[in-house]
Amino acid sequence: TLGYYLSTSLVAILIGLLLVNWIQPGIVNNQPAKDLIGLSTSTAQALSSVEGRGAGDFAGIFLRLVPTNVVRSAGEGDLLGLIFFALLFAYFLSRMPKEKSRQQIAFWQASYEVMLKITDLVMRFAPIGIFGLVALTLSNSGLGAAKPLLAFFVTVILALFFHAFVFLPGFIYFITKKNPLPHYRAMADALLTAFSTSSSAATLPRTIECLVEKSKVSRKVTSFVIPLGATVNMDGTALYECVAAIFIAQCYGLDLSLANQFLIVLTALLTSIGVAGIPSASLVAIVLILSVIGLPAEGVGLILVVDRILDMFRTSVNVFSDSCGAVIIAHSEGEKNLLSKTGG
Ligand code: ASP
Image (cartoon, rainbow, N blue to C red):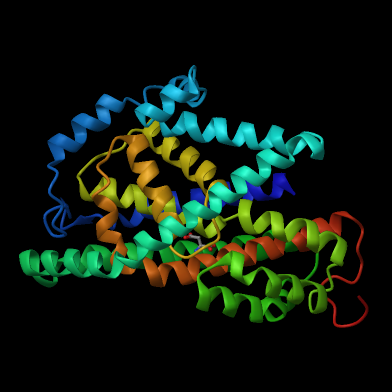
């Protein structure tokens, strides 16, 4: 299951990476779209901080990944090290005997819920913030700002569609040799719920229901793969994070080195595992990726305008990928009636 989750997320990120480099939504008429969308940091400033961060070579990235002192990493905002530590910590916490880990898990669970509440409070102000940002940008540069944003929107949608309608069904067919089309019909309810709530966590019960009742995946496999997938496997989110970070870099006029692009891919993969299945959760991860690269966080402001609609699409892809994972794992467990109308 973990192999499926990591590999499909990685493929999703690479699809996004290819398309955003090909379409280059952040470049308008051969010029970075920075001024059009009213970013205040100059290219020189952005460039110097990116270089200061120095992703360095590939070995350097892996060295930065492992913190020598996790408290210092937290203090200095070295998020890459912090994420790595958090993943390691959680992994071993989950492997401890229940009586030893119970209190820790309850503590982190409660902290997580408190953070969600705080985020919720902050996000209540988002509409005012977005209004201010959009009004300011439009008054400065007129409708010109719409062009790069539209190109960004189209890039994300194209990449998501390719992942959901070419790669994932191809993967199902490759592994199970079954026609993947009935799976779309079976999952329609869950996909619509994901689309309208923008939350894979809220869609969870519906996803399980569709898989068990319509795609004929056993409850045993579904109840293991899906709750795990709803938190860990977010292909649409991972893809979006990568496209958004590179789009923002393009807007600043930065030509990202291979090492920096690799850093984005890696951070998108790691953060997509940690992102919560709630609306707009990716935005937090994008701020994080920008800071890892050394780009100013103001870049996120500009994608806020289209974020909500893209959230609907990427959440559906998140849910659909989880469901394909369940079909593939069920097949590997020898289940026979998958994607058929009878039996179950
Ligand atoms: N809304 C997404 C989900 O719930 C997370 C995100 O990408 O913001 O799956």
